[in-house]
Amino acid sequence: MENLISLVNKIQRACTALGDYSETTALPTLWDSLPAIAVVGGQSSGKSSVLESVVGKDFLPRGSGIVTRRPLVLQLHKIEEGSREYAEFLHLPRKRFTDFAAVRNEIQDETDRETGRTKQISTVPIHLSIYSPNVVNLTLVDLPGLTKIAVEGQSDSIVQDIESMVRSYIEKPNCIILAISPANQDLATSDAIKISREVDPTGERTIGVLTKIDLMDKGTDAVEILEGRAFKLKFPWIGVVNRSQQDINKNVDMIAARRREREYFASTPEYGHLAHRMGSEHLAKMLSKHLETVIKSKIPGIQSLISKTIAELEFELARLGKPAAIDAGGKLYAIMEICRTFDQIFKEHLDGIRPGGDKIYNVFDNHLPAALKRLQFDKQLSMENIRKLVMEADGYQPHLIAPEQGYRRLIESSLTTIRGPAVAAVDAVHSMLKELVNKAISETLELRQYPGLRVEVSSAAFESLEKMREESRKATLLLVDMESSYLTVDFFRRLPQDVDKGGNPTHSIFDRYNDSYLRRIGTTILSYVNMVCATLRHSIPKSIVYCQVREAKRSLLDHFFTDLGKMGSTQLSSLLNEDPALMERRISLAKRLELYRSAQDEIDAVAWSK
Image (cartoon, rainbow, N blue to C red; front, side, top):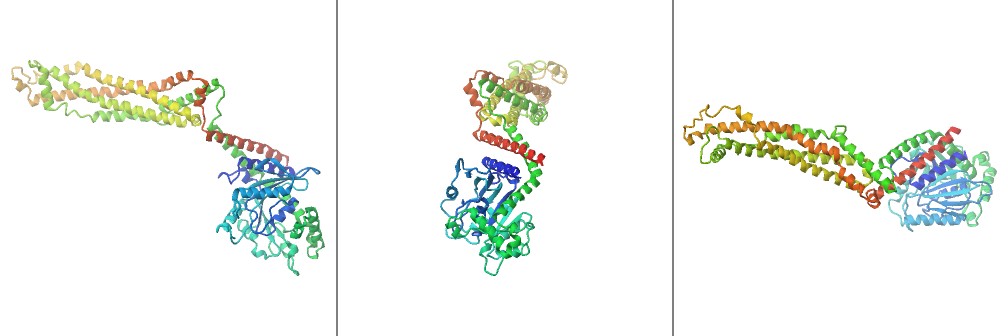
């Protein structure tokens, strides 16, 4: 039994040291899954005296009104007989207190550090461990006493604040409620019983303790309550007799006080038959035994939570990545591996393994054809422009068969307008490649780890894409210019000659340039330009893919790799400088993972030994 409770105490201390408890995280924690005993009672109900009786030491602050203003997580550890008693605070890990008056002062001082010298409260707990041969292994949480009104120096919300704090502990299904009620007051008005019934209506988790039995009015007793007839709980009520204020003033030690308590129950006729299960010593033993029973029953759930949390922590640590290497060679290798991972993800987007590459095809299959169709040749092929260019091309001699130079000039001016859609297609693919780079960067987990490297990789990739865009523009415009520089002769040879269509050279020049003739020239040129557009619709995508997409897949980071090889250790280190918050989180997660693995091993060992 003692080994099991000691293990839980050890795990709780480790959880607290790492901040792995509900006050510091919104996630379910190992601390929350471990059973603990919360001490609940109204102010002046004798809560502090019960705790001191269980411990066997004077160590709690005393006074009128609200004395306990922060939760006190008290862990008791039984040590070998003859060993010296001492206490340790979590906030003073290297300091041992052997003077328990100093423990009381430190509790008061630590409370004041958090709340100031006021009567306000704080939810931040104080963690105290006491090591003694005279205690049982136990974990208790002493909570501020419930009150009904605010006194001077307290906020109006103090009543609700204390109740909310108490509820935050006792509402947890793994919490055992130690409800302290004074026997010299009507049990129906007990703050502890009232709030306990609200969160534990069946009494499955509540242990009732009746204090101040020796202070009841003459002619009255607490037998009906202690026997469970007045107010029934699952577990028998336990009565205790605390030290009187006079005993405290006279420094009556706990050993003598416990002896008096035993004598009181044994010698009082009303309680003689109950004496074997009354008193602080029985309370401590009963709590320890019950806590062990509860812990055993919760072991499967604790194991399940630990296994689940270990998996989550391992996944999160893997997502954050490993710490950076120390030597220059290791750093260079790490950077290269991260860049290769990024490059592979980028290629997967282009190849359709990941989404995004289909948008580039959409440019070729929809945007470019639509842009070519939208081209307007009205200006180039208007009657006035055709007449002007044909006449200018003839010079001082009219053409004999067909106005060839006029045709050439009209075709060249029409094909020039195709440059716009061609460049637009290049730019559209460039934008999509940049978008895929951003996606690949965001999906490369290691790049999240190193902001400096992320910026450099992004900059290098964009710089390469810009160079590829310039080369693609040149190549694509060259295709358009080639169509303008050399016309497809066969197209015109297949056309009927002007002589056969009424182009009689004996007519005057003005007759030859009539509207019908000029319209026929315009129709011919438009037909040729449409043929060229159909050709370019297929050749422009080929040029773009060759100059941009293919090159991006082949050499996106080549220049960056060249620069990396020239970098010294200091420059490489700057690329692998992590976000301090991320480094801190990795350390925190690693410590939590170590805690949970250790807890898993120890709890599994206990579970298998049952």
